[in-house]
Image 1 (cartoon, rainbow, N blue to C red):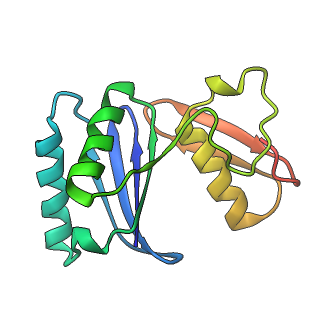
Image 2: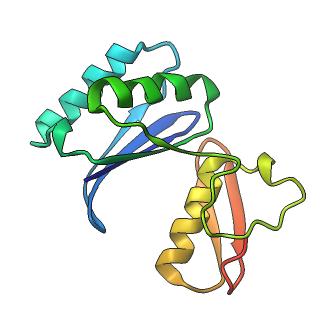
Length: 145
């Protein structure tokens, strides 16, 4: 199974996929002063309540717009899942061409949203994210950001 973690300024959303099917998801507050073990135990309790074992997780992907959280969650993945996560950020190839003056200025959350929306719809679209800051992103019919 795949664990995906989307860290936003206000909330962190976790989801577990079995193939293409989202089997569980949770929303927790983003707290930068929690320790690795506090996050590990929190995720463990979410899993336990959903009858999921950490041993079932084969891969992990993290999208994070809160830099202090990245090291914490990467360590959680290594310590509690024995898995090195894929960190979505500048330089990660998503298959989506980004036509933006400075692509490194676009948050990982916006890129992940754009890729997921295009994969789902396969047409031109506007992606609206009502996160801490509302964002609008246009994706061309050819899947270009």
